[in-house]
Image (cartoon, rainbow, N blue to C red; front, top):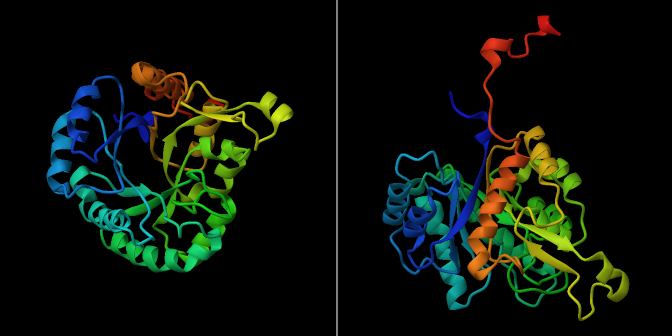
Length: 310
């Protein structure tokens, strides 16, 4: 039988901008990852995505590994050359997701640079209403990552989908069922938001999850505040931060979430550079434990919850 534990898979992200995704998957496919998220930064660099998808699946081979989501990160709302590349990249990822076996494309909404967040809503509605229809025609869902990219309500460069108040505005502008969130607790902790109640409220819109955490340095906040020279929060690889991933995964399961938690590395101030994969494997094992460990099938022998045994 299939492994019910893997209704939520634990995987990692792999860069695809330079065509290296298939080679990277082949390199780390035997380390225990159950899914991969190939992602592009601002541009696909004109790659043949159908061919890239085939190479990624060939690298997976007959392993029990999936690709549920592609990442396309940039600003598709503005009109610089790379912004236009990002918008085209979204279209290409949507059109070619099936070549990877993916059913979701994730990234930033984009933003009118330097403007208050609500000023971006008309352009957001224009671009994403069209992309939502394009994706729906392909059976693809779109998930917006909740990263501020150093922006806030008053100004920013990349993304408006970083705050639950913004989500209310966005999904009012675009009520399409296939528009949702690529959620992670890290960015909520950066805002000093408790992530668990957020899952309960927003679970129907959580289409994909990033495995990234944060450590809030409360002693710094008490002494220096959040706008001083001392950083009050560090982004962390799961297993090294403040989040209770057992509770997070339990809440996701209770809400009916199925899909992947793909680790987003390259942010931890300690487990980076030569220690990057050490940290990611720790996160992989940690998240599997928080998922409940290994599935044990005893239902046939012990009744599987027969009410007569109560």
